Length: 221
Ligand SMILES: [Zn+2]
Image 1 (tube, rainbow, N blue to C red):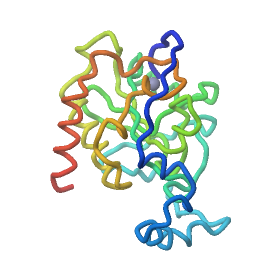
Image 2 (image 1 turned 180 degrees about the vertical axis):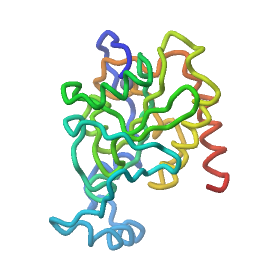
Image 3 (image 1 turned 60 degrees about the horizontal axis):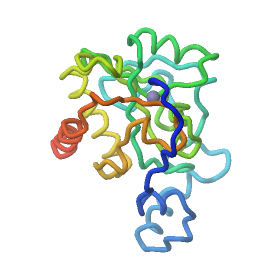
């Protein structure tokens, strides 16, 4: 979510890794890719999907609250679409209003996770699925979206507990999909090409956040 901004040319430089993942497999006929492809081949069989259990979460400790299925698309990631990005949002409203919005089929948008100011994490869409949060189809398909409770113009909303919890969550996502912990792959909504949103805003402390993600990434799960 987040505040709108005046349209501008927001095209960011896409990293080499992102290009490889976004491009065709044939473009990178390496042994490494072949091994990955073989391991995942079974899931590519048409009609085969990973087993799902009602209420299951991808992040230990998260509470499950289902988003309306109008706000996401069923998929089989990371096999049909590779995941190489985490996108950071700020809600521009309370935690409860964000949960309500994502349950509303008319909202037409939702993230996978919402982090509350006290550090509580709610998951509303499985990482398997494509959440509509970036306002850009390609970026939706390749990312996991995380909302943070608060307003972009209120630095006091971005609490220690929220940074810590979100960093642990992002570190687990990066570990799961082998995403590099850098600013090419962990980005703000504002950095998505074509977006008119400004979140997470000028008060989001990227240096601090990335330091916390790196620390969580290297400590045992
Ligand atoms: Zn946003």
